[in-house]
Structures are given as structure tokens and as C-alpha cells.
Image 1 (cartoon, rainbow, N blue to C red):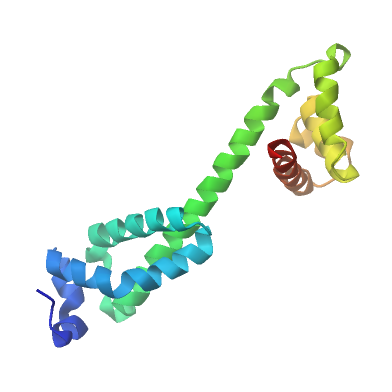
Image 2: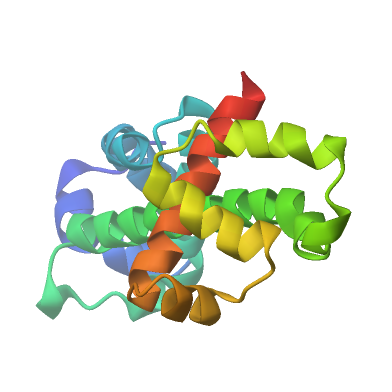
Length: 179
């Protein structure tokens, strides 16, 4: 049974705080399409947006007691939860992708330069497709075994530049290797 509009306008948050399933269903019907659109713009995948939307509504349900009407409307509170959940999802996904790419290169770090075989020459061919500034950083860290800090000193670059070039290079290499 749908809730009356006056009830929705005045007491929806209060009904949610009492864990009313009807109120939750009404909130979902009212706001899910809008929240989904915002989430989709952040995660850029319909399937992932559905997952993030569900996770957002679970957080809304579990944390409704934290909602304070004096700080904003129910919708803006829900929007903030959905947006933060989507951002957290994309950050964790990027970190997972980075970790997976780092795993592809872990074995390279342990190869002394005098033991490079023809298998590793193929990798050098792939690395040679990168811009020189990315090549130097990747070779220094992953082929010659320097730490990022040591590479920063050796290449006379700030540590942040070394890290960002490694990230960009790994992303490019991933695209090359997936083609």
C-alpha cells in the first residue's frame, strides 16, 4: 500500500528510522532512478551501477539513524551516500587493476640484468612502445629492480612523478597486452 504524499513529505525519514519496510519501498521507488543515473555517471557500467545502487540502499537502511533533517533533506543525504559509495567503488576497482598489473611485473623485479633471456626481450619490445619518459621509469623499477625512491633519485624526478608515470605506463601496457 503506497504511503500518502503528505506522509512522504513530512514523515518519510521518521518512518525509515522505525525500519518501516513500506517507507523503504516508497523511498526506493521515488529515488532509485535518480540515484542510479548519478551512480552510472561515476562508475560508467550499468551492471556495476546496479550493484553500487543496491549497496547504497543497504547503507541508507543501516545508517538511517544518522540522518539529521536539520543538516539537509533526506534526498541530499541519500545522494551523498550513493555518490561516496560509487567513488569508493571506482577507487577500489582502480586499485585492484593496479595490483593486478603490478602482479604481472613482480617476476621482472627479481631478474638480474645479466640473466635477461629472449622471453624478457619480448617484454622489452612491448615496453619500447611507451613514450621515453614512461620507458625509463618502467625499466628502472621493473627491469633493473630499483625501488621507486631509488628510481626518483637516479632519474632526478620527484617521487610523485615516478609513481604517476608508473601508473600511466602500466595502464598503457595493460591495454597493449590485452589487444
